[in-house]
Amino acid sequence: MVVMRSSISFIYVLTSTLLVFTSCASISPGTTRNVFTFNYEDQEFQIISITTTSGEGSNFLVLIDSTGSEVINGKDADQNGTIDQILSGNYSLEEVNIIYQAGITSAQEKGNYRERIPERTFEYFASGYHFVIRSYIISDTNVSNLFIVRNDSLSTELILMDTQADGQLDHFEKGSTDTITNYQYFYEATLGIGIKEHRIILKNGIYIVNQIPGTGSDRSNSYASLH
Image (cartoon, rainbow, N blue to C red; front, side, top):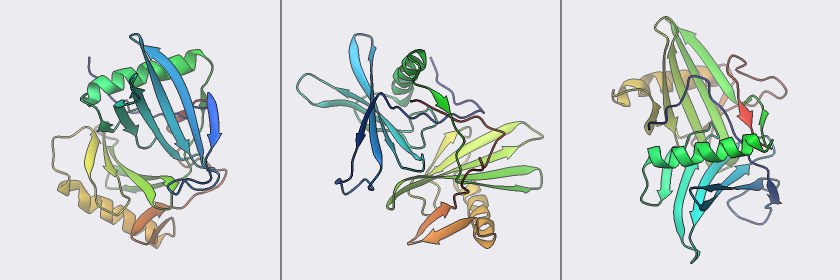
């Protein structure tokens, strides 16, 4: 079974149990750590959601064994419903995403689900292409950017990740056997245009899309979260 990302993305935030962390150095004051527990094939998994006061963050799929050892830790960097990275455990992205989707379905069935639209989005159109940069912030030093390239006439979409928001694309999240360097130019160009239009800032080597309060920036896509 292959888990594919659809052209409509979703952001999931789990709030079954709410804990506010203000003393952890890696988490900003006011950032919440939320935990949702579900059973899959007789094993108890957790989805841990780290979310800032602005609604941005990351989710982690975790399995702990009876000794307290971490068996699985997978990261959904931008809360879009797909695990992007295996932090620990001998499991493939495909296997972990199947479990993750089961957890999301469980939360939906229990009514822990709501929709929202991300606000840190910059869009640029040129020569039939639609370029989108979305910033996701956990703390001042934990920022990632998603770079989306769409060709509307061909109905194609590529998604790439800049995991450090440092202006360097790291990997594809969706759709290409091409090399990242072929898209690095377009990413840098879009960042440059965003800076020129005062929609993107560069601070301490990190590129961040400015937030537009109260306006969903890309209403053509549906984003969702869990509560």
